[in-house]
Image (cartoon, rainbow, N blue to C red; front, side, top):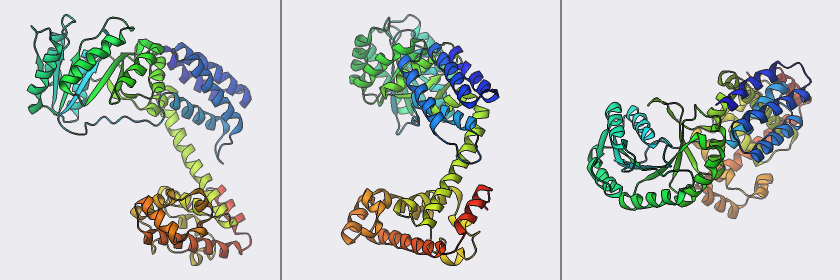
Length: 448
């Protein structure tokens, strides 16, 4: 995709720039706007995105140890990922067997090739796959799918003399059910991008006959922003639907198609990245954006930013604890950090006398299971209870236990832990200079 590919060069240019930070940010944003607009991403979306990037870049401060330019690239990564679907990761494994998938789409979108690509993808994962040729309109559709089925080693069903796609689909599913874990039905398309009504009507007829577990709309990336209307109509017509965007490698409009689909809220499940059978992959927005920015470089940078952010977050939690600004939110962050960084004791035991003051996490049995249950308990508390755990009485304990799926005893255990930690922090607070020493050690990277 010529437009999106130029984003990598914009990143390199930004990191090498000798201009002031603000000037380099503005130059990068202009380059990013040009790249996205040439990739047919919606104009309003592009300007909303770049406005958000600029605001964050000029207001947010990077964690200690990170440069503003490195932090800026992380901001770009996060904001770009949002427009392509954010943290949404598709579930590609069939939940049961046999699992029936019906492909629909306008003519020329690549349904037949996509059917074979899906068969290849699932065959590689060890599933038995069956293909049904229910496209009775396009000359050669039957022969093409039959040959592709042989190539990927999938079972095949078709009726070359029949003109009844509904009957073919129904009989094909019945025939393949006993010997296939996944059955993929290839249907006929419609001429032009304005024929959604006919497309959805055929989808409904075949769907009523075979009751597929999933209906998948296959769209050509060259549709660009036009993908929004088709994806939106499809998504509204069938809540079980998902979408595959094909030919992503050969069009400058790919960014428009992907962002348009994401804007509908529909599940973008796979993307076709080339003409070969094996060139299909689940669509993961963050991985996609990582490649746009230059995956090797961005991956290492993001890992470093994550580590620095965790250190800064840990420092804030410790400061809150030692300064007396401690509540159940502090405990929540502490538990999260224990899971990521190991016991908080590992960081704080540098302080003389600390090990005598803090309750032993091992003795308390701070297991992964217990931490999960304690996090559930904290998530069931009201804002008032989070800020003032002291108000939690027997009635509130019962309510929190029911809401979190735990027992009143487990809620009491967490409250006891909170009281012990708070008591320990009060003892430490009396020791002069402890916080200053801890801050110096944290800033020097002394995490043990």
